[in-house]
Image (cartoon, rainbow, N blue to C red; front, side):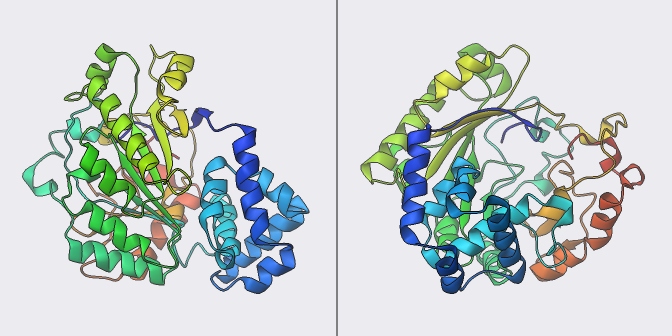
Length: 378
């Protein structure tokens, strides 16, 4: 996992020609806004409202599409026409953050932790905190638990599922079965895997591209082999380049370039040349991005520094750890804010049980909450 969490500083995306091709694919599916709305059979009331608001704001489908990110265009181009209103409504709702009208009903997206352990010990990550890497905190999610949570997420119409959190998801031997199961659900549109990539081999890369995942993000923070070793303890840049090559070759061999979006994401460390970073990784993936570096450990010993008295994270996402513990964010990697476990409550109840925390953070009472009062993420 990357040490990020901060503001996006730079992003190298495909050129305008590729964006235009995706826009054209989407517009070929529908001739009018009225047709889109008439064929819509998946959206929630909130998603339909957000879609209609976006149409009013953009005045046409073409203008609306021009304001989407490449990722949004990419996923929208893969969906059947009956799902476009719900997908675009979900994405526009995402941007409303604390003002989301369906905030009491569901998170925008779910983060499922296949594994809490990792093959690296990065100095900026909570994997370097000995109070976290104890046997009682390390483990892999079972298939039964993963399938149960995915079923509930589908029933709640949670559109985005990210497989990642405190550890490396590829360490879970059942990861491809988990992805395949999620991809079979009609209400989950985005299935993202965040990985450091170092465990990929040619055969595992093939299994990954055939699993049903539609976004793969590789976390890495440098282009220099020595600097990479310092930041990614236990890894090697040469090994990562091999993994990126295996994945790209497998995606091409199975003609999945238009089904799986690939991205490299890193944090902007002090001695990093952003131009070199972008140019080094761009031959391997569709997008290369960098975010500002934030303190990821030890969250609990940070000095109080509240640049923002609110926080939108518990209002937009829900984390489910490998053992079923439900948490509002992974900055609280020791689960001090947890109020439930999906083995005791259903997913909707777990979301509801965090309403008091959301209310406090949404109303500027962050200073009274631990560890929110010493966290830089907002």
